[in-house]
Image 1 (tube, helix red, strand yellow):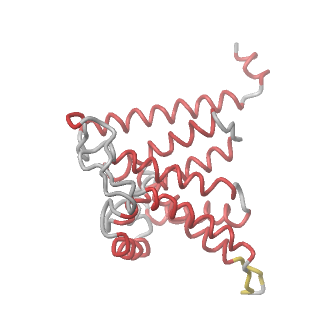
Image 2 (cartoon, rainbow, N blue to C red; image 1 turned 180 degrees about the vertical axis):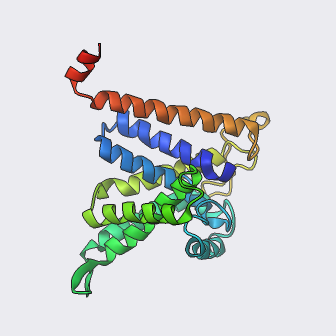
Length: 244
């Protein structure tokens, strides 16, 4: 879908809505989770060389995409399934579980889990920014910002308990988004080869179709509305009274 923009926006909007109205997350946690979900919203397309996520960190992620494509069986195969969603989230769980595995380098104790998690988050942040066209003309600056944010989260353990959930939601929203298209998704593989669709045949979308741009615009407005609502909730009561 449109270089992943629609996927990223819809995944971010879904996480922001749940985090704000269901889980009542703190603003910092909500922002971090939404950013991760945006990146995870394009993560299933790592099975395609040339996709947004495959180009997010240049040659490094392109090499990963070649491997994922070979293992998954091609586009919209293994990574576009419920099992694929669980594996994507499970990688974050594994990285966090490796927190206790340490080794010494440069006279500082480093955790293998932090390194793996940092690299994973960097790819997600980079892919999310690329999909949303943030610093899209400055690869170096995007790489640096993604790596810095990922390193800070991995090193401090910030919201470690919510990272996997954000990834699971983002990848699942991606698959549901592809279920709106004419191609559909065999989400139940390897248990069933049934191709799932969420719309009647006449209403199914084509990738890059005008309706997709309308959906992307709607998701953008949703994210903006959620951001404004969160800011209003975060303002002190006396500030709101004074504004009146």
